[in-house]
Amino acid sequence: MTEEDEARTEEVESEGTPEPVEPEDPLVLAERERDELRDTLQRVQADFENFRKRVMRDQAAHAERAHETLVEQLLTVLDSFELAVLNIPEGELDDTASKLRRGVELVFAELVGVVEKAGLERIEARGKPFNPEEHEAVLRDEGEAGGDGPLVTEVLRTGYRFKGRVLRPAMVRVGSAAG
Image: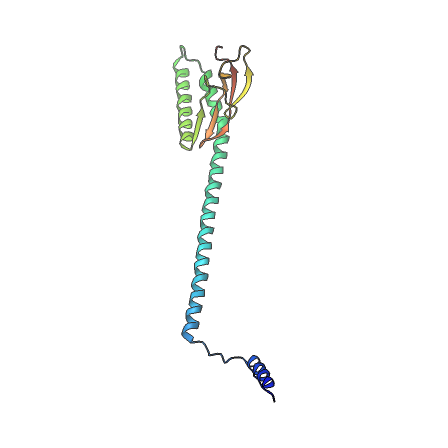
């Protein structure tokens, strides 16, 4: 055999036979497994915490929508009480009519207090510049346009915000600043 043949043979033999692998230390294997389990546990804990926060947000949003729906349904009751108070005459009333008016006013005030505590607030409109986000103009007084645009001259139906968001715009009559 020539030197080249011997070199090729050694090359083939060295490529063909794998280097002996030393068995890993059981301590190293246990540490690696511990680290993998710790990583898995941390990921599961983070996923669970994110899930818990998402469920809490969803529950809060659902409760908020339920409150808003209830308050929105009570708006017609508020309107009815407001009309009742406005239509009971204030002048000379006999004792029964006076007590009736006072009773309606007290119930109306208590109902308003409860819904305000829940986050409902009236939209003050009379004398304010018309704002299409808060007012619904259903009547317009003819006249010269004001310098700052139309003003609300009369509130036909009270508008409300619930926790800062317009729940129902105020139904208004608009006119000029001079009118």
